[in-house]
Image (tube, rainbow, N blue to C red; front, side, top):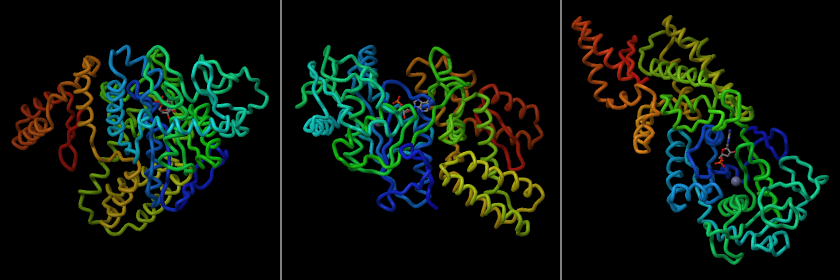
Length: 492
Ligand code: AMP
Ligand code: ZN
C-alpha cells in the first residue's frame, strides 16, 4: 500500500514515491539550539517521526537527515548573555533537545550534521551561485541571492512575486543589497561575533544556505522529501529551493511536507501570554511524556492543533486504558471458543488502521481503529467470549499500532525522574508539582516493597496496616490500584 501524502509543492495529495524504490531519502529542518524545545517544535518532530515509522511499516529503509543550527543571531545573543562560548552553549541545548526527543519516543534521524561543521560546503555552494551572478557581494562584504534570477521564486508558497515591487522585504536584515527582496547567503563579520575566514571573506552563513548545503551534501541534488513546520514554508524553504535549483539546475526536494502549527489553549504560544511550554515545563507539572506524545499525535499533521490541559489528562487516561488492555490480552487466560465476529472486527480494524495512516497519515482515524478493538474485546472478555486465537490477533494489532504510536511501554517514571534531576541542577526544582519530588524520592524498589507489604497485610487481614501504607504512598505521590489481575501502582 503506497502512502498518499499531501505535497505542498504540487498542492495535491499524491503517492510518496521514493526514487530508489525501497529507501526514503528525506531532510527535515532541525532545531536552532538556543533554548529548550517547546511543545510546538515537538509537534512537528513527532509527525515527522510518524512519517518515518509508517514508511518503515511499508518496507522502506530510511535515510533521514536533520540539521542542527548551531550558529545564528539568537544563539550569539544568548551565549553572550550566559557568558559562554557558543559551542559550549549550543552543546548544552543540543543535548537537552535529544533527551527530549528520546523522552517523547522520537527516533533519531540517521544523519545529524551541524551547521558549523558544514561551512566549506556552504561556501562552495555560494561560489557556484556567484559564477552565474546569482550570488553577489555587497559593499560590507555580505553575500546575497539575486531573486530576480530565479523566475520560479514563490512556487512552493504560491506567493506571486511578479507584482511585488522591489521594496517588499522577504528577509529582514540591515545589510545593503541590490534589491530589498534579496536574501543573505553570507553575513559579513561585525562586532567580533562568531565568524569563519573563508574565500568569501570573514563572516558566517545565512540560515537558508545551511539547509541547502547540508541536504545536498548528504542526499544529492534531488531527493524524495523535505519536511518542517508550516512557518518554514516561506521564506526559508522557498529560499532553499531557489539556492539549490539555481546551483544544480535540477529539482531539489520532490515532495514537501509541512506540519501545521500547534496553538495552546486557542492561542499562538507566547511567553507573554503565559501559554508557552517546553517539554520540561510539562514534565515538572507532573504530566507524563507518553501522554504528551499521544496528545500531540492525536490530530493529523495537516490540521492545526489546539493543546489543552484537559486534552492532556484525557490522553493520559487513554494510555492507561490501552496499557491495561494490552496487559489483559497478554496475561489473562482465554478459554472462550473462537469468536468469529470479534476475529472479523480485528481484521477489519487493522486494515482501517493501515488505510488511515496511508491516507495522508491520518493519526486520528488510526488511533480510533485501535480503540474500536479495545472496546469490543474488553466487552467480549467480560462475557468470556474471547478465544486464545482472538487474543493473539489483538496482540499482533497492538504491536503494529505501537510501532507507530509507541506509547505502550511505560518509560514515564524514568523520564520524570530525569527531569527532576535536571531541575535540581538548574535550580528549578521549586517549579515541580507537589508530590512529584517526593514520589521521585522513593525508588521503584522501595515502592514495590511497600506495595508487597500492603498485599501481605491485607492477606493477614491487617487492614489498618494496609490502609496506613496506602496513605503513606499516596502522600508520596504513588497511587495503588487493585484489579482482578493483581495490584498495580503508578506515580501521580
Ligand atoms: P526552530 O528551532 O524554531 O527552527 O523550530 C524547529 C521546528 O519546529 C521547525 O520545523 C518549526 O517550523 C517548528 N515549529 C515551531 N513552532 C511551532 C508550532 N507552534 N507548532 C508546530 N511546529 C512548530
Ligand atoms: Zn531548513
